[in-house]
Image 1 (cartoon, rainbow, N blue to C red):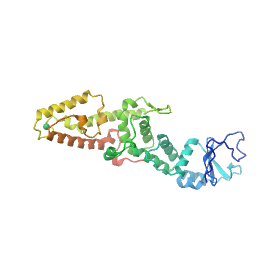
Image 2: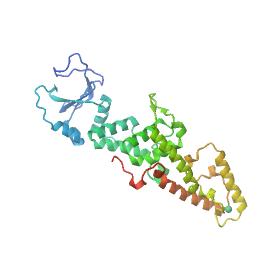
Image 3: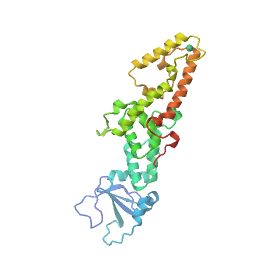
Image 4: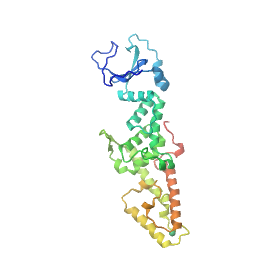
Amino acid sequence: MLDDPPPDKRQRTSSSSIDENSSILRSTIWYDDGSIVLQAECTQFRVHRTLLCQNSTIFTDMFSIPQPSPDETLVEGCALVHLSDSAEEVETILRALYFHTVDDQLPISIVEIYLRLGSKYDIRCSMDKAVHSLTSGCPTSLEERDTISISRKFKAPTPTMIDVLNIAREYSIQTVLPFAYFVCTCYLEDFALGMAREDGSLAELNNDALGICIIGRRRIHEALRLHSFSWLMKDTKISTHCAHEATCSGHKNNVIKRSFRSSTDLVRVALEKWKSSVIHCPLCTPCLMEAKRLHRAGREKMWELLPSFFGLPPWDELKNLK
Ligand SMILES: [Zn+2]
């Protein structure tokens, strides 16, 4: 059963080998029938050896080493194992093991702990939770991108988006990378000097990531002319059935002029659906239908090419947690 002293209640261990003046905290994660005590910083956790071994090959190996020393420190009869991680990190990972929750999106600080300790101790379930959280906010198909709810999608420009990209790069969560790079590229000016998190710390992209975004932005601009906006670049009639060539050509040129005058970076509309309210182009019916068809096909091509803009393999070759 879970003993529930106040989280900050200070309690000395029963071991005489621990300095009587030291202040050891007992975590709320303290099971009376636990079989091992973990200590991180000054906090101890009494947990079940079996549970740790079931979820971690590293703990299995650690506990399989005989500990014959008669001087071994015991806490309430349990072996004491010191971990070099912070108490907050250990508590977070233990909660993940004991309390199974299915969260689409976890706070990014929790995701980072799941991945760091998950990879250090080979705890697959925490790494899977972290990957699920990241991928649920970064679509991997155009259909998902169009239907993903706003509450699930990572917001931009926010420091969280910088953290998402940095974490995906560090832990090789490749399926997250195309969309994360794309969003950071859309808001490059906002992200270039970093953004302050709520706790005042600065979320920053390193020079390598910034360089990839800068090159990606140039590639996207080039691809926009060939794909999403190919209908604007045509020297001939948009549709061979155009009945008002001069009028349609004039409308097309007006859209091009507006695009140049607009302060919105065209990268931000690279994956957007056709919106009549935005494009304002009263073409004749055959030209409008052809323009929409070219835009739709071009947008699908842009999505297909998205990983390549950032030097990544095609979508179907992207893997997570190699
Ligand atoms: Zn026309």
